[in-house]
Amino acid sequence: MLKQTIPTPEEVIARAEALVPFLREQAARHRDDRRITPETIARVKDAGLFRVIQPRRYGGYEMSPEVFGEVLLTLGRGDASMGFVYGVIGVHAFHMGFYDERAAQDVWGMDDSVLVGSPYAPNGTAVRVEGGYRFSGRWPFSSGCDNCEWNFLGGTIEGEEGPLQQRMHAFLIPRADARVVDTWNVVGLQGSGSKDIEVVDAFVPDYRVQRFPIFHAAAHPGAALNTGPLFRAPFLPLFVRSVSSAALGALETMIEHFCGYTADRLNVLSERVARDPRVQEALGRAKAGAEEMKTVMRHDLAQMRQIGEEGRVIGMDEMTLLMLKSTNVPHRCQDIALDLLRAAGANGIRIDKPLADIYTDILVIGQHASNTPGPQAVNLGKMMLGVQD
Image 1 (cartoon, rainbow, N blue to C red):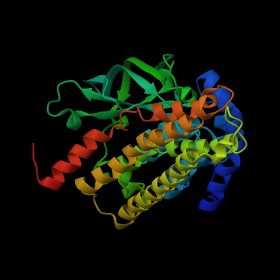
Image 2: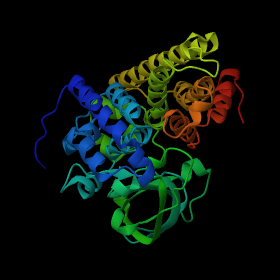
Image 3: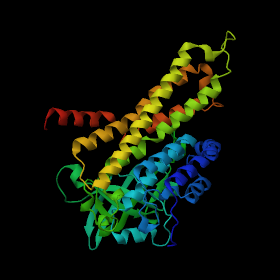
Image 4: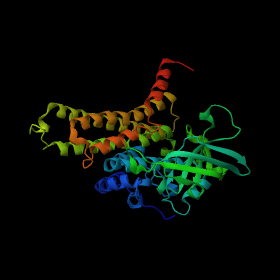
């Protein structure tokens, strides 16, 4: 691997910002192709953005959660699909930091720009064999899979007993052992290319299998090699932020387009729509809501960084609160976006305008399994009330 020159956080964020106009030009193509194009991925790679929370020992920048969040938000302003795919793939580079050195070498030994996809849903079944496992299963919603050479795939091991969460593992599988099944025909976020992955009786060496989710970094072999504070930050809250924050970037873009679309528009009575107090109120509330969510996001990412710097194990109540605040984001964004769509009038649904497409992108982000506020709210409430199952 060639030695990387590590830019400053400001340079990385500026590189992401510079890509926004290009991403807006490419958004329609991403939607039509139902994937992020190789050209777009190459530009994001060339900007070094996938390296933001990749371990330094494998060519990454190993920056803070805040930098990762700002890049994700910025790319989401360019194209929600690219922002979402970036969040998913970017957090996988972070996850690789907890794996055995041999696994990291398998993935990045020849090329440290290789990308890793998922999903983690425990749809696979593994059977123990000498040196590892025979593994099979099928997983929907593998975002960005066309651009990934490896995947984290969730599963359980035959014969293990106990609650599902304690039996879940992440199996690291090369693309050569998996098949992409094109099932991605959806109403929004088409460019994420979140197709199915199928694996039939693949051999997975034991060093490429780890328990998942990650609760304690010290329980994973990569923590002994990647000793920086980033790899002591809590995994699950950062993961949930990675799959929710593109909705906020998309909302900011919708606000921008709404202003441009509405400023000089006339209604059926030839009156300026911009003078309508209901339109003004919807726009003002949208701006305030977006700024509030950005402030909370930055605060929470800074809290994750601080936890890593302190090297402490996060409490379940603190972790659940961080995740709940993340899962709320796409749904709040959707409510605000719907108000803007209504305020735009009948012309807001035209396909030559971006408002309806952005709304459906936000809607689909909210459908991700991790963006479900109800269970997190119930769990937090139970802890606050001292209720035990």
